[in-house]
Image 1 (tube, rainbow, N blue to C red):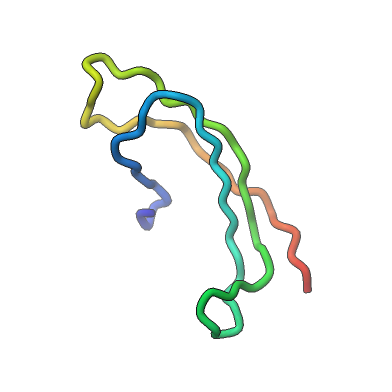
Image 2 (cartoon, one colour):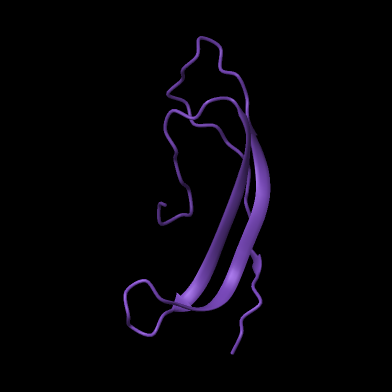
Length: 73
């Protein structure tokens, strides 16, 4: 993910895709641990057929906004 929030996934075949992401506070210092959830997203995007089968142009899927999470304290 780029600093401005953009991301790129190479060689995605056309179709519908579910996106699920979570943002957590840092864990307790042990690798693989997470703190409380801060935000999340569950959404679907559609990758259309590309004329010629391939393009170097990025597909703009619009803004994907995170929702406030449900942190457990």
